[in-house]
Image 1: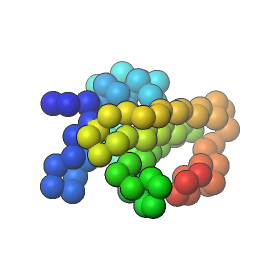
Image 2: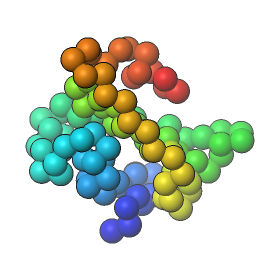
Image 3: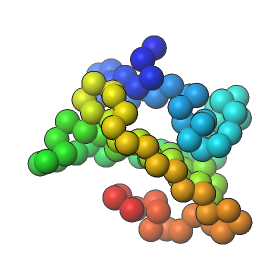
Length: 96
């Protein structure tokens, strides 16, 4: 599997990439995904960002974001860890 692939409208991301971005082991990532403790959002670019996709993953007080092109190549990655503070609602909003 490619690290990030698009298949019939679905986006597939290698668990190791997301786990590293959220600062956890891949096995824990998979467990928390099954339990609904990790959520995600996929936003497709428009206008100047057409062909790009922003993938955002949320886990507790952490957010990990990837911006990828139409071929699944990672253009940018960022992570925020709010430590002991909860993730603010603005960090969950589109574009936030």
